[in-house]
Length: 282
Image 1 (cartoon, rainbow, N blue to C red):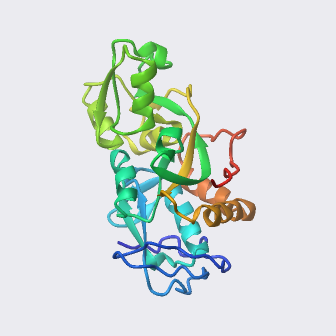
Image 2 (cartoon, rainbow, N blue to C red; image 1 turned 180 degrees about the horizontal axis):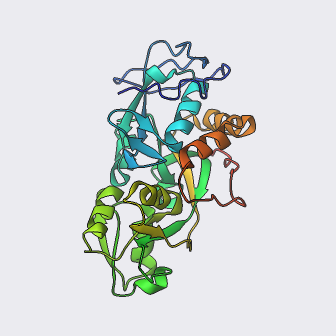
């Protein structure tokens, strides 16, 4: 599955980088490139994204859009891959660690929060964005934060940091786990749950994609979610990916991608935390 929607974005100057462990079980080139020149030796790079997060990672009938997608394209370009050499792979929250460990993907850009627990099995580059956990509720709801959820039905996605946080810090909440956020929104539309929780930027995209006026984002974040690029343990790509992220920010492509993907969405990123500075690689 390949897309060329953002063909003009991100195919910048060549960088002498190497990507290992790619497509079809063989070694991929990744020798510099960018500029759409295909200098990665004809190999493909498998990038994990979400397919159900409007504005971040979204499957529009085989065309993939969103901020995560645009950042991934930019980074892949800096690694020497054209857009035609990217294979997009759906990476649900619960499967991401296994997909990296089993080499089903080469890297993951999927609202993947950097946590100490995940670092035990996954390496991260980045962060490339910082969000915060919030709540999506029906437009007429009086829920204003997690403290109002005692005894109520709350939906989140299996394997997400959002679901983990609710289990650990709000045990009085009846957590209903679903495989994806689209399923959570559908259940809330049926009236079976009172709220959906995940990161504010994801919820804003879901609200904008829903029937007009049906849902609202509470706007009371209660965590800091640092989105990283998931890599296999021991990967040597972290420094090269961080350099690509820093270049994207410096060139203004990061801001452009964010604005393009948030157009029509009622959401303002936390300006004190964004754009972030990538962590040092271990």
